Image (cartoon, rainbow, N blue to C red; front, side):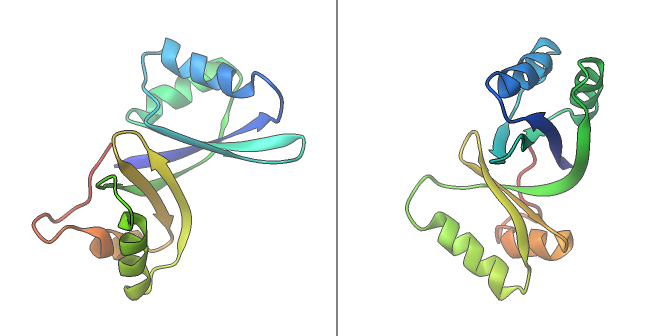
Length: 133
């Protein structure tokens, strides 16, 4: 199960460095990250293979996870049109995306309220489930 963790950080130099250092010091790899925010705070989304360990070390570092949710991670080819094709399949299945970001190793992270529908829409014909981190 892939989890997207959200950490509210100050929108200031060093905020990402503090989170990344805390997680890496615990031996946890950050497989993907995206950050949104133009005001005084920002929302940092991270994808890690060991969510419990990351949450624990962030709490110790006084960098709390404010939200977490299950997401679908899809392995993709690095070529033009891949995202358009996937987004088209997801739309044709009637699934509304509310989160998308790119992960390491040619993967895309998708979030939606309808996770079962999302999984079905992106599942390769020869496999039942999309990739896990």
